[in-house]
Image (cartoon, rainbow, N blue to C red; front, top):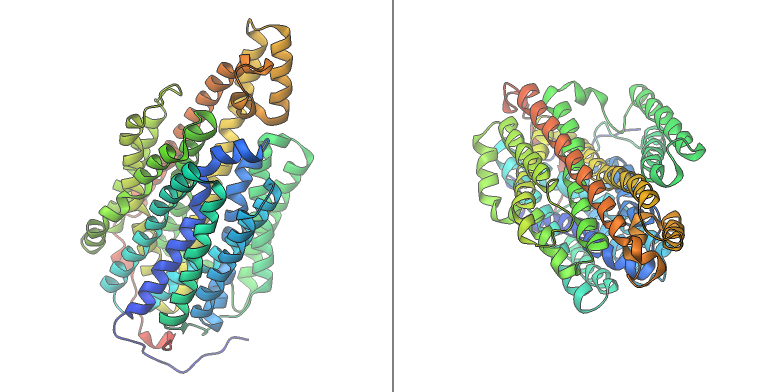
Length: 527
């Protein structure tokens, strides 16, 4: 049963310690999420993943993040957010240790899943603490801009960390360093963060948690395994059916629940509904781009982690430089204009990236397209978050924060899954056709066909040139190039669709829909 704590107006300004703890926590979560991207090439060389196993290294982390963020939003509202900041950081410590010690891809998945469980607590909780500690639209927008910049900082640190450790040591050292950062975040949250909660009208909605968890897991499983198992295979079709059934059951459960996990009437708010859709599609576009770039530079072109890290600095590092600009834009412009500009830049960058030939190994060729995507992402992620959180009453800040984080990270999870599925399916089809019509000897064709049957074109592209299947490596390279060109184009189309929707459907602005609420709904305590 829900209950109400005594009203406490809380501090007039967001406590500095809470801001530091929340920003460090989301930075940590983003580092842990982004760190595999620059290491995909090393994973391919060391662990020899086949089929969709390489995609699962990233999505093993993202699945618990996506599935459990709403649940952690409720737990933070009910029992206090500080505890979740501390507990989430500790789970990342454990998960990164397991990942660093893994001897095979399956144990690496386990470590990623444990760390993802910790990140599922940190993403919505850190945002809810920042949003709940502010009392005006302007203060909240500024705090959210800092929070979003901290998230981007994590994306900036991850490739540098991955590049240095992968180039001069081992991919395992990257996970060790993240473990140390997680330990520091645990201490900072424990010592500096002020606890807060919003238990009024909130309770553990088990029906909602179970149905949304099963539904999202089944959907993502089907998307990831489709290219490997076949889209018409029994497990994949069954997973799609389960996903559809349980998403419907989630909607039914939330409509009947006395204290729902997610108030569906939030989506009757036009700005919140549009921001939610854009969060999924726009973030799908961004991480799909990042994943396509990581596979292009790593397993396809076999560039070093240090060189690969440059691409990810372009995608994430520009957000730090843009922090003052982003904060001012959130104060002075309607949310739809910031979203429109950001998504248009992302679309332009993806379409330019799609024109680059796979034989082009120059990093300078990536500066313009990935720089545009990075600037666009910096504008988009801040405005999406501010739009969603600022358009609901403050006592729903935790729910809106969790919903926004879930949708954003659902888009993140779909990015590698869908782009990997599209690109690898296209590459496999083209490679099979090109191999059959090539002038290579029957022995080379047979050897290459056997390797491709086990690990797809990526495996053929990675065999030594002097080996029997190595003669087909150029065909694999060309097929992969075409496959990931389509991947970049799909990301561009997704960003463009979101751009048009933000421009047209958010007409009239976001601020007019903001309903400021008295601070009595939010219970805040000192550390």
